[in-house]
Image (cartoon, rainbow, N blue to C red):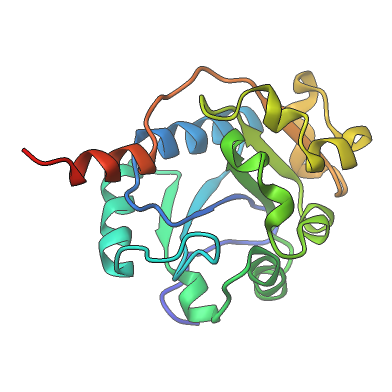
Length: 198
């Protein structure tokens, strides 16, 4: 194995994937909220080699450095494992991780802003059927995301917030929506602000 994160059988590992272009406190807010409510041992920040839905990302090394600067705390682990695995799509990454980390309890974590367009992800129904999913609210999501195709398709598999701590031990497809306090930062806004003339 290359310089991959350590995980042992029975551990609860949250997976927060993204471009992180750049990483910001909103990402940390999502990661910490999920870790706290679900009782996770670690949260791996999967810095993607190239998000298929976001062409023209900054260099990987730059995005990794950005994530490492933001992902503070003993439970946060930044990794480029998708580059080593040679995977580009979430479904393929999950398949590879589950085969290499046998017995580890993985949970996919994402912000509510990703929920609205989740049906555009390759094999999205298979993703939901692979691992439990935790969705943390984001300002740009709104009611539209919670009424999106994924939410409707798996409506009967939504876990009540009061049972969120049991998510990791539930059989997928299963998901929970956490209406946590908002963090207004977004990577898109940060990039746009950088491009503004002085």
